[in-house]
Length: 161
Length: 126
Image: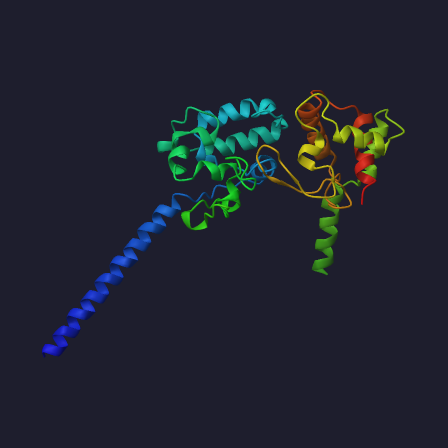
């Protein structure tokens, strides 16, 4: 009797720990999902992805994307102008999937200067940004190894040495 | 049978836009340029023309090799047709990149002669 009660208590502990671990894992997945972006458009990927990663539309609010699209001929120092049909399709895609919430009040067109970006990257040492394999904050894939698939989750980050 | 049909369909679709580098070069000649020179194209490719960049800043001085965008660090596929069969096969794409990159490097559009010289240089490699 005493033995089976002890066994029951042990079982209960094992189950409770497993359940808590499972819940923690689920919570972690849910948080990680906040760093996965699935919006996709072939033209956006081809055109925006030529000189840099095709940055997920969620990373800037709609007004900022409008600003970007209006100034493509002087795009951060280079001419990135598009033909009108491509510009219309990509502009609509960006606005439709633009960032909301804490990303909606970016005061800049440069993603890496926004408050949420700085906050997300505040653990990255200054020297890491300057490594030749990184070069620039524009180079997401240097550390976010699955960024091409829209996956910026913690588990796929490897900061190069 | 279905495979053959698909192959014919794909070929028909591809031929709607596909060109060869030689045909694109011929297109520059049709715009009034002639006597394309690979050495002249090479000089244009490697000169900075008074700006911060040359073509080779990103495409490297060996267009058979992979390049790297000097600002963003993004990998760039080789530019010379011998190293990358996709290059200079889509006239609209060729025009888009000459339009943008000549503005960035030379501060003005390139002439048909200059584009042809650069293409002649790239075609001479490999």
